[in-house]
Image 1 (cartoon, rainbow, N blue to C red):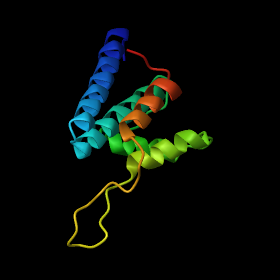
Image 2 (cartoon, one colour):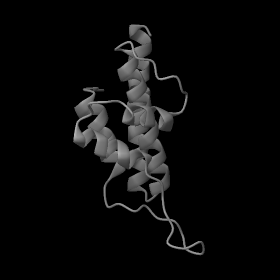
Image 3 (cartoon, rainbow, N blue to C red):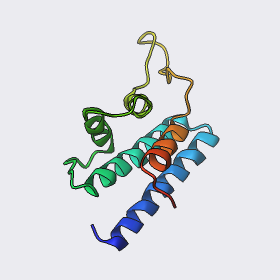
Image 4 (spheres, helix red, strand yellow):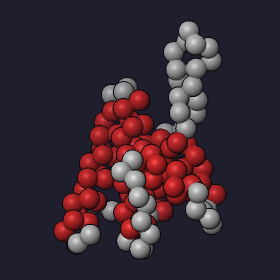
Length: 121
């Protein structure tokens, strides 16, 4: 991927994070989680591609799962990745599904992208 394409991809990642934040702030938590996962998955794929490791999937969620399988991840990174792949849950089939954690998945994705991968706008 050339320099111009990397800049464009980086902009896409941060636009997706911005959409995640806006969705969260607007109470659309499901959309916020989808956008956070997408941004994180794109960042993961780009991070490893820049290091010569190809993650061969168009799915952002599968890119997150692929990173989870890698050895030597710092515990805090593994925790964020675990949160990113966690699904909503139901206590019974008749009840509405809900996010089982109190964490802010948007901020965790931002931390992964900016803090761990060192990406910036």
